[in-house]
Length: 196
Image (cartoon, rainbow, N blue to C red; front, side, top):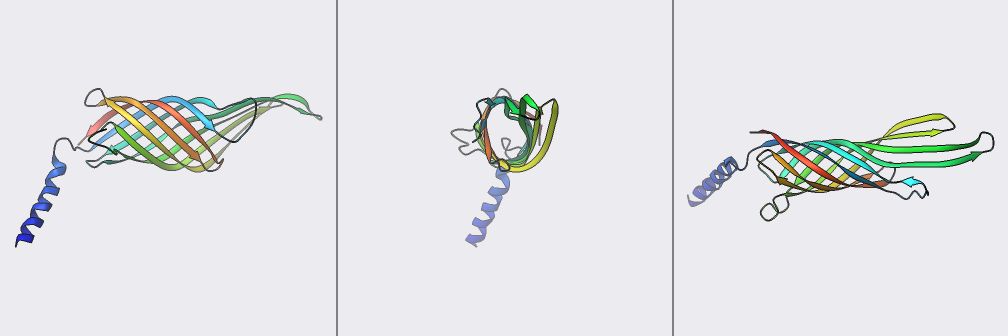
């Protein structure tokens, strides 16, 4: 009899706890922009590995510590400007660049919800669309390819009011097709557009 009472109380506590006012389900849209640095083994004197990164993502926050979402964006990887000499064609300036567009599924978690409630760790995996552009001897060259990859990040968001937050994010991405990675630092804006 005592076991039935304890078991019943346990399940009642579980059922009542998620219904408190501070454990609502919510959907947020986050947008960020900032600095990108390409980490590679390519060794060219005129290789520019610094540029712009931006992202947009939608996150679903249930009453638990784990949140789910999807993300896309733009990551500048590199550009190269050099001169080449081909005896049959002469000398030409060569330009090449690569950017990536990720399409990722995200898992986010607040590791220390009591002491550091504004910090989240994120991990995501998915595909990267790699866009290559080049110019040599007056000819334009462009191509696209797909690669799988993953991303990990740490995010800090400071709430300004019930719906809007601002913060920053440090992000590391690995792209398996080119076996290189990318680091970015972004300013993030988050807007809670739905709570239920």
